[in-house]
Length: 100
Image (cartoon, rainbow, N blue to C red; front, side, top):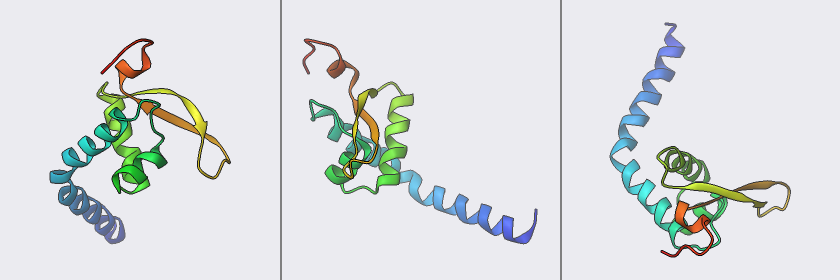
């Protein structure tokens, strides 16, 4: 491995190791923010509701979706109204007549 690539790899690995203890807490913050909003939330809305960066919010939403804790229920315009973005909710929220 070239020196530049090794430094990049080592830096990424160090960053990953530094964040791992907090990922669970961040994931739970994201889940709770989505859970309490009946209409679901976009990644931008999650970011605003939790104070977590947009990139971090997107990553946690993806992880929660892969774990089956959240689902995409549709799309709506982003804040800039330039494109339609995914809206996440808990699986039970997506079912008509479901209550939590």
